[in-house]
Every structure is written in structure tokens, then in C-alpha cells.
Amino acid sequence: MTLLAVERIKLFTTRSPWWCAVAALAIVIGFAALMAGTAQTDAQVSVGSSQFGYDFGLTVIMVLAALSITTEYRFGTIKTTFLAAPNRTKVLLAKTAVVALLALLVGEVAAFGALGVSALMAPSADLALDSGADWAQVAGVGVVYALAAVIAVAVGGLVRHSAGAISLLLIYAMVAEPLVQIIPRVGDDIYQWLPFNVVEKFLSGDGATRGAASAGPPLSTSTLSQGWALAYFAGLAAVLLATAIMVARRRDA
Amino acid sequence: MATGRRRMAVTIDPTTYETQGRHLMIEAKGLTKYYGDTLAVNDLSFQARAGTVTGFLGPNGAGKSTSMRMILGLDRPTRGTAIVNGKRYHELRHPLRTVGALLDAKWVHPNRSARAHLAWLAKANGIGKSRVDEVLDIVGLTSVAGKRAGGFSLGMSQRLGIAGALLGDPEVLLFDEPVNGLDPEGILWMRKFMHRLADEGRTVFVSSHLLSEMSLTANELVVIGKGELVAQSSTTDFVARATEQAVLVRSPQLPLFRDVLTAEGAELRDENGGVIVSGMDSDAIGELAAKHSVTLHELSPQLGSLEQAFMQLTGDTVEYAAH
Image 1 (tube, each protein chain N blue to C red):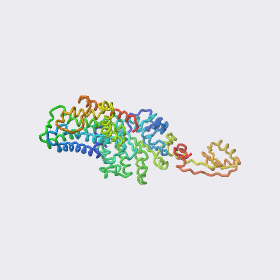
Image 2: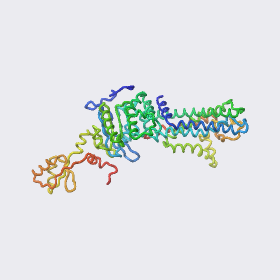
Image 3: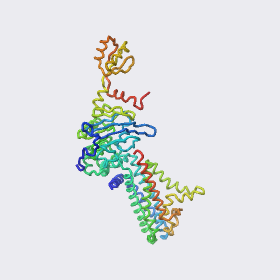
Image 4: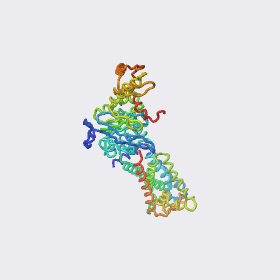
């Protein structure tokens, strides 16, 4: 518990987490406003379309999470931290927990904020959360942000350099993963199992939440159920975090 | 004081008691560290006792910082152990209450205020908030406590680092090159400060590459070169030995006189055209020469400086020495 409080103090006494959180909110909610504002009829606005901007918020959250640990290496505060609390496993678990909680919170506020702004701008649209799929699409955003934050903290802890960790995460999630699809023959089979594709399945399922919305990011090609898709993403986050902790325990600080 | 003093905790194994009744607070046993194939510290063993300032002396790159990081559990020794107050660092429950360390004054987030930096450190070791203001006051940073640490001068950063080290009112303090880059006033302050800490019964372990500085600060010296122990002794002994008078002797009957000097217990070292005699002053050598009817061409006392002596001791262990 003490270490959670310590990591909370550390996170909120620097500026970048605040900026990142505000940026994530602004992007996701702003994107929903853009979607609702440019729709020709209210019928094109759906629960699914209100969340189209979630991807952009996700990148900001991963930047926030990666920075929370890489800046510690950059400024040497990780050494100060390990002097004050030599149990590195506990320190890293506490840091991950605090960052993931912030990501969860930001994700929920962003997702419900996006839904709310859509409802304001397209009053006659059907934006009621009346199915499990609708709930997963909106409430699931915070959960995905939290897990992505865990992945980003783990990668940041392994790479230790801000620029390196952030480019690795963003290039992978935004560029490399979609590009796998163009590999002849095996590309689609591999892509089906790549994490950011799989987690899209958890959020948007088979597209039932999108209603009449025409545009929007492609649906996931994963064949997992929504529940298993989430479990798969969570499992990956756990494995990466365990690896990062193991490596941190062995390496010199 | 919120935390209260728990000086001389009784959990220490009796075998670590030093004969004079002083505690052995830091004990390195066979510390060895490889970075890849590079041997940074080699089988290093030494002790630091309570109530003394122990200087950790060696040229740059001798392995002082690496050794300190191993004592503090930041770097993992390839072999050997370091014991602080009877335990290994990571076994200490609230380490900052036992050991305070200032290894690098820059280990602070530049956008965090001095107070926030100390606040999370205090929180991590169950130290009360009032102590944060206390240590800020001790190092004289109260007026800038809310300012971001990134804007601090080197001297101020150094003092913030000291405040962090003092936070848990620890029995053991480690400082890595604390006077580097300080102005003369700062150096004087630091020197007095370390003496005060030792007078309070604490163990102060301080590294430096400057013998002259250490001769003023430390009671005990642990001297290392190229990662290996060169000497551990009291500063007085070390300085006496290091500045021991040597005499240059030249004589046409040198082979004969050599035997005479050696028989009298002097130590000889060849020097261009003569020998450097140590362990005997010039008066004694002159009289010996007269007694044995040896002609002397030169009999000149060599006044070595501390720095020269230090170079001599660690000279062949300095990594960048010209060959």
C-alpha cells in the first residue's frame, strides 16, 4: 500500500501525466464530436461510432505509461527509488498498478464522455447501452487502456529509453501490426493473433454496435469470442510485465 | 523527532563487533564486479566503523562508485557481499532509516519540487512529513522547497541530495565525491558537516579521488586502485607512511654501501645513478657512510608530497597511466 502511495506521489508531481491524460480525453471526446457533427443523419451516429477515436487515445495512454518508467531511468530516479525500496518486484508492481488505474479512469471518462457528447449533438440517435456488446464497446475502453498501460510500462522498463520505447510501441501498434496483413498467404493467419487486432475484437465484436454508421476503422479479424479476446490481451500484458520485472531484478539499476 | 533514534540497533551479530567496542557498520567481503569482460572491482574487502569518517580513496575509474552501488544493492556483485549494519541492503526493512546515500545529486526529476522529491522518499520509508521540512531546514533549502529541482544550481542539488540522505536519520551515510564541483565555501561546509555526523556516532563513508581533501576529512582510509584494495589504515598512518622521508644517495662505492644499508634495515630502490633509501633519515645514512668510510657524492632528502605518495601507491593501478 505504501508503495502505491509513493508511486502516486511520483506520478502526479510531474507534468507529463497530466498533459497526456488531458490530451487523451480531448482526442477521444473531440473525435466523437467530429463524428456526430459530420454525420448526415442522426441514424448514422451509434454507440460504435461514438468510440471511433479510442485508438488515438490509446496511443497517448501508451506514451504516458511508457514515460512513467523511462523518465525514471532518464533522470536516475529509479536508483533513488530502489534505494528507498529495494524490493524491485513490489516497486514495479506498484508503479504498474498506479499507471493502469489512471489509464482505466481516463479511458472510462473518455469513453462515456464521447458517448455523452454524441448524445448531445445527435439527440435522436440510438445511443442506449442496451446490450452486452454496447457495454463492452464503451466501458471496455478503460479496461483496454489499463492493459495497454501495463504493456507500455513493461516495454518502457525493458527498453529504458523514452524515445526507443515510445517508437517501438507506436510503430508496432499503428504501423507494423496492420502491415503484417500484406504478407502473402500467411499474413492474415498471423494478423489474426496479433494483440491490438485481437483487443479490437473485445471492443467492437462483430460490429453490432455500429448500427448504420458507414465509415470507421476495420473490424477485428480475430476469431476469438469477445471474452477470450480480452483474456488474450490481458495474458500478453501479464507476460510482458513478468518479463520486465524479472529483467529489472537481474540487471544493475 | 518523529522517527526517534534507534542508534546501535542490537540486531548485530556479536562477531561483527570490533575489538575497541565500536560497531563495524559497513563491511565488504570479496566484492567483485565484471561489466562484460571488464573487471571493475576485484575481490575488494574493507570495513567502515561507527563514529568515524572513512575515506574511500582512489583515482578516477578505480571502482569507487561501482563499489558503493554494490553496497547499496543497485548493482549486483559478480561475487562477494556487502553488509550494512549486519544485513545486506535489500534485507533492511526501511533502508533509508539505516543508510542514507548521496551518489549522484542529479538523481532527481527536474520537474518535481524539492519538497515533493523528499515527500515520496519519506513516504516509502514510513517517515513523517514533518521530517521533510526538518531536513530542508538543515541543508538550508526551505525557501526554495516548492521550486522545481531542475532549476537548482549544483550546490543546491547537492544539498537536496544530502537532505534526502538525512531523511531517515540514518546511522550510516555514504557520499560519492560530495565536494566535486563545490565552491570553497561549500567544501568547507561539507567537511564540517561530515565531521559532525561522525561525532554524533554515525558511520560516514565518503569517496574522493583527492588525497589532500581526504587527509582533512577522513579518520580512516580505504585506498583502492584499479578495483583492488591498496591499503586500509588510519589517515595519520597512511599520510605518515606516504610522506615518509626518502633520501637519494649516490656513491662510487654503492654496491658495498647497499649491503651496509640493507643490513641496517633500510629499504632501497634504484634511482638514476643512485638509490632512494627509505626507513632511515639522512643523518643516520651520513654517519653510516663515515663509519664504513664510504664516499658520498650525494645525500639529499626527498620531500614527497601527499599527492606524489598517493600516485606512487596507486600509480601502477591507474588505468590511463602512460606506458
